Image (tube, rainbow, N blue to C red; front, side, top):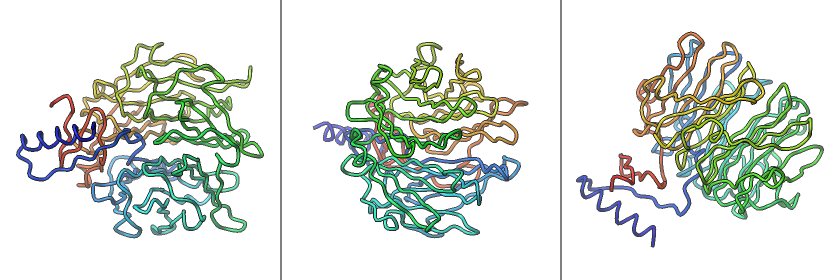
Length: 421
């Protein structure tokens, strides 16, 4: 019934605009906000790499020059590899040992594929290589490199709401599979759950976080074997909003784990693990800083800077890109309206990616504007926040947006706020 009403409203709006063809895709649950955008900094070269999915379901790669300014575009799907599934997530990282670049996505057959760079871009069907079950439609993706062993780790959701782990080892070389939910008896993931993962540098423990069907934040962590944990219950934290994003990282000097999510009140909450005393703690970052409320459907992106400051980025209900950043260690938090700082365009309540260039401390954030362009803002110690429209600069295709949220409907080549009709 709801889908029918939305479709009729979409059709009426299309006729009003004089559009003869339109697309209005309905989803009972908003697609997770880690859709269609990922990236990282290439530490040795000082290049920034950004990947996104275009409206033609191709995976595109834009990368900066060594000056961090000029951008170049590559169509990875056009070079090699199958199309991405509509609504596919993306995950990427660079291998520290050989500096290979990896980007993972879902194909239309619900296989996990990767493009990886080894002198040229190559493609691989990771699902087929690992003999893994199909990913659920709309599954999130997350991954990282295990630095000491140069292993690659990728996590996704199966149709049975299990979390699967595919990892590449070198002896013998090849992909292997683990059903973390089945192995540990951990809680089933909520349909459409976000995922975030990282490896702790101090003890090389691996962590993957997700939402259960009860909207609790859970994790699987590897300490000799895999173990499950209900983090929400351990700290009596508020439930996560349905469709909430997840982001997190390790606080390197202190070996703390930091995870951020959005509550039903549109507040951003921080869950962090300390060792003295050992256990999880809770902070309501929005409540403590009077920050702008998070928009429904916004992604979350985060990193810890080389100065030990922690940064979390999101789109607010005002369509501005905001950040919350801490003093070293995360004791005191401050708010910053990045869109106001650099007079940037309005942001879509969707994907965000962020990282730091460790060579100079520059902070990079990428998001999608309401024209479906990839926008880049960078903070430098000398100039503050600066803006850059990558899509326009490289004459690249628009970002795919194959879903309906509570706030936006994709209508042909236009985005319409649902409040407009």
